[in-house]
Length: 235
Image (tube, rainbow, N blue to C red; front, side, top):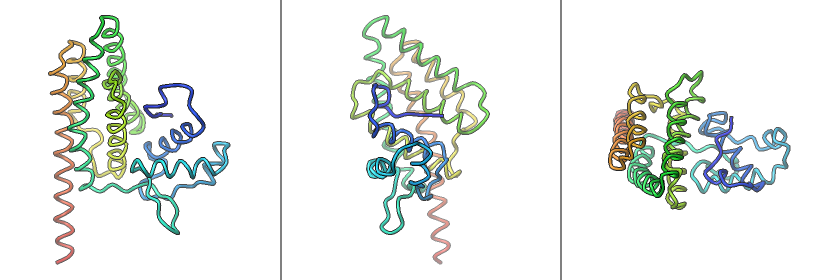
C-alpha cells in the first residue's frame, strides 16, 4: 500500500523521490516502528536498488524529522513523545486551516474547478467513512481525505510544512499512546466535507480547526500525565 508524498502527485518521479516515498511509506504505516533501526541492506535487496540511494534518503528524511541519525548506531525511526507531539499539533492547528482556506478559495475560481474539488473530497470522504479491515487501511484513507482538502492550495511551502508535521504526528500515533480513531471521528470529518460541499469556507475551516483542537486536547492530556509520571519516578 503506497501513500506517496505531495511531490509524487507531479510525475515523473526521480529515483531519489521514489526511494524517499517507499521509505516514508515503510515508516508511516508502521512496518518500521518508532525507535527501530532502518534495515538498509534488506530494503535495498527488496526494492532492487543499491544501498546508496537509501542512505541518501535517510539524510533527507532526517531533515523532515522522521529519522534520527545516531553515530555508531545507524539510522532509526524518530521517537515522538507526548510533549513534542503537543507542539506538533499546535503548529498544525495554525497551518492546516490556513491551507484549507487557500485551497477552497482557489477551487472556487470557476464552477468546473469547484465541482472537481468537491468530487475529490466526496470520494475521499466516502472511503474514509467506509469499513476498514486494519488500522493501516484507515490511516491511508484518513491521510487521503486530509490531502484532498488541501489539494488546491497553491502555496507549496505551506503544504510541505503541513505534510511534514502530519508525518511526524503519525510517529506518535504509532506508539499506541495517541487516539488514531476517536469515536466521533466520523462526525468530525463528515462536518468538514459537508461545509466543503456547500462552499462554506469559514464553516470548513472552523470544522477542521475543531477537529484538530480535539486531538490536541487529548495529546496535551497525555503529555501532562507523562510529566506527572516522570516526576513521581524521580521522587
